[in-house]
Image (cartoon, rainbow, N blue to C red; front, top):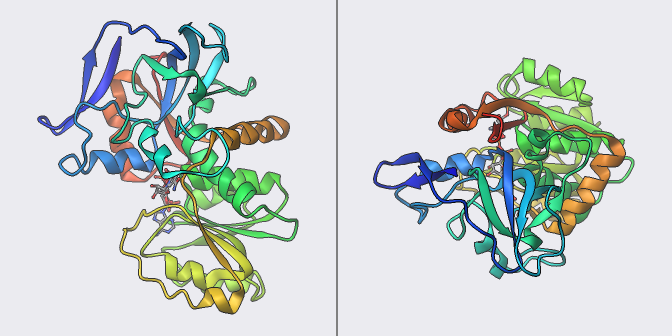
Length: 337
Ligand SMILES: NC(=O)c1ccc[n+]([C@@H]2O[C@H](COP(=O)([O-])OP(=O)(O)OC[C@H]3O[C@@H](n4cnc5c(N)ncnc54)[C@H](OP(=O)(O)O)[C@@H]3O)[C@@H](O)[C@H]2O)c1
């Protein structure tokens, strides 16, 4: 089989070959159909020297078909369509620090950019039947993160107003979920074209954050001074202060990302004035993924895949992600090319 790995010596991703591995007890071999990229993957590759990822296989999100099962593996049968979960050790209940090293494609575990992967059977969910494998590959990290923020940690209510930063992977799942739940969605983007596309997905209020750098004032104006009840904070240091200034009484900031940098020094005083909350989100559990899949099936939601790449074009996919011109998800069609 062919796969990609980080090479510290060459300071890049390289393609490699290996014998087809056999699943051990409790394990499953998945023939990977597709794998999607998240900002995390681009970030890892930009820090070759800093992180212990030499020889690790990248990417956390895969869809595919069960190809062989090991002794005692009972959850899936050969031929079933599946997706990987982000943390193989986080099945349900509260997060524990001990789950973190299990994350696919991180420092502690190989990822899924491979024609076949061997995974514990617990690390899989069934694919929604109506979605293609390319669409399913979009779900594990970005989809579950948005779900966790909007339906688990601060569940949406009918009058809510969700502020979504940008039009990347997490953002568009949040838009699709919140719109399907019937709440008002305000979207920020650097591009009027992307805002128009977000409008077609259900965004009612559109703000270009390049043209309107004080976008918190626009959010307050749009909401008649009440603010946004849910804010998906993916920007980090350049957006956090304005997120706090956009927040509604009793509202929640879901602290998710660091697209503009890690050095946050926000003034948190508005939280007490507003009786408001910040919740930290780290993807989600298998239970969250399964609950999300039920919602996706009921609502017939199709993930937004901006562009597909072939397996041979994997490096181009990483470069394209780094350019930040995409709308939604970028997916490598592993089996198709
Ligand atoms: N905690 C978790 O579990 C978790 C899970 C997934 C992702 N994340 C983090 O969340 C962030 C987003 O991840 P992703 O995979 O969705 O990224 P992505 O697909 O690369 O999304 C990037 C988009 O964010 C928007 N953006 C960039 N700077 C912005 C700013 N100053 N204000 C508003 N929007 C801005 C841009 O949208 P426009 O092009 O429309 O301007 C950009 O295209 C990353 O920091 C990632 O590490 C965390």
